[in-house]
Image (cartoon, rainbow, N blue to C red; front, side, top):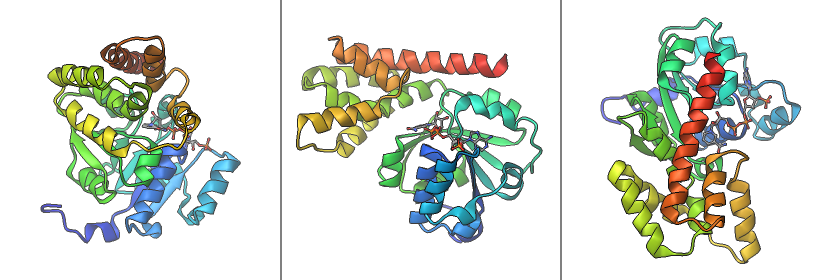
Length: 273
Ligand SMILES: NC(=O)c1ccc[n+]([C@@H]2O[C@H](COP(=O)([O-])OP(=O)(O)OC[C@H]3O[C@@H](n4cnc5c(N)ncnc54)[C@H](OP(=O)(O)O)[C@@H]3O)[C@@H](O)[C@H]2O)c1
């Protein structure tokens, strides 16, 4: 934790705007790692099933208004869908707040335009890996306090120096599903080495993905797991569809990276228009 006082975690206030799949996983992880529920604020849009889930976790006490969260929390994780981010433009909040965007594809430039305060962008692996404290997080630009919080949640941190590498990292967190779909070790290794030439962290992401791969009793359990990892129009879908079509592993990964770039572009166009 270097110079950051370890007691900081006893009084730091953390907000989570958008308590869906990812937001709930972050919430659960913070609680599991000793953050006081009194110091955590969460919001959602109004879906009754979201409320039920927060209540089941015994954390209804953490629910708060967005304005209050942006003004009272020191660090605010934004975990809504990317296209919902624009509604925060009108909110006035403390200039000391650090906004941590978990929104895939929303650039730091756009975030700075929406949140007129300190912003940092992170990309996390799937919610199940966050709750299991086996996840990975890419951070851009690096922020020491945010890094400490993620460390405390037992996430492996990748400091990103070029924002464009977020697309490669986002493809990397889809590796668990891709590795289950592909049997040919040789083509997997060739592909990883190839992508690593552009982005050195890819080898570490591969090692992480192999380590967290679940084992299955039956083939249908495995297929079910892969299906759960796939979101319609998402990056994992692009990779899995490519592998199913018989493409080489490297081609499938490149299609995943391209899909990530396309999604970022679609989101930017949506937000800016
Ligand atoms: N899921 C993943 O594996 C994953 C991994 C990495 C990154 N991400 C990123 O994480 C973000 C969330 O994904 P998700 O799968 O968790 O989505 P999700 O389950 O749909 O959750 C979105 C949440 O945002 C809430 N929300 C919407 N507008 C809001 C507002 N104005 N104020 C407060 N809350 C609001 C929704 O409330 P209601 O529940 O009331 O509708 C919902 O709880 C996305 O941007 C995605 O790019 C997701």
